[in-house]
Image (cartoon, rainbow, N blue to C red; front, side, top):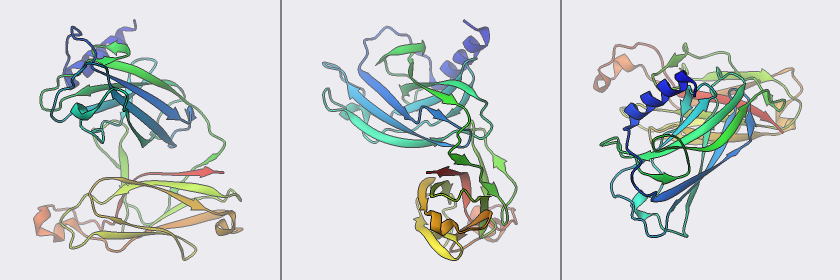
Length: 288
C-alpha cells in the first residue's frame, strides 16, 4: 500500500478516534452517488441508506456519519460529515433510514477517480461503530466511487460585482465569498434552460431579523427564501431559455433584505468594518 495513504489513514484514525475491529458489525451503510462523474464546482447528490443488522443493538447518544472524498493517493479532498436524520439507536432491521444530501465538488479538485469513505462515530469520545462493509482502515468503509472530469452540461459562474474577497477555513474544500449587500453572478448565456445551484448561509445570529433573499434576473424574481437557521441552504433554481434572454452573458442578482457591518453590532465584538450581506459557498449552472 502507498506509504502516503497509510499516513493519511493514521491521521484519520487519530482525528475520529481509532477503534479495534474486535466487535460484530451492528449496522450497514450504503451510498448511491449521482451523477457518477462530476466536474469541479458541480453539485453531487448522495443517497444514504442506514439500517441496523438483525439482532444488533446500536448505542444511544449522538453519532456523526463522517463522509470523506479520498483520491487515489489517500488524500482527503473534502468531507460532508453530518448527523443522520434519525438517532442511531432508533435504526431497525428491515426498516432502513434513507435520505439525500447534496455536496459540491470543490473547484480546485483535480481530474481523476475518488472514493467515498464513511464511518459512524461518537463526537464526545471519538469511538467508532463497527459497520458492515469493505474497510479502508479501522471502521472506515469504502461505499462508492466518483469520477472527476469535464462536464459539457456545466457552465462557469463568475462572482462579478458586489463581493468581498474569497475566504476559506480549515474545513477541507470549504471556501466562500461574502456579498456587499447585493452580489452579482455572471455566466455565458447557454441559450438553453438551466438550473442554477446555490449554497449560501447567514451565520450571524445577532441580526435584528432573519434575512429575506431574492434571486433576480433582469428585475424578475426567480426565487425567494428566508435565511434564519444559521445553517447553509442549497437552492436549485430553474431558469428558462426565455428568461435567459438573447444577450451573450447573463447577470444574476443575489439580493438580501439587509446587510450589516460587524463592527457596528456590539454583540459580535468584531472589528470587521466590511459591509456583509450573505455568504455564498457555491454557485454552479447545470445546462439542461
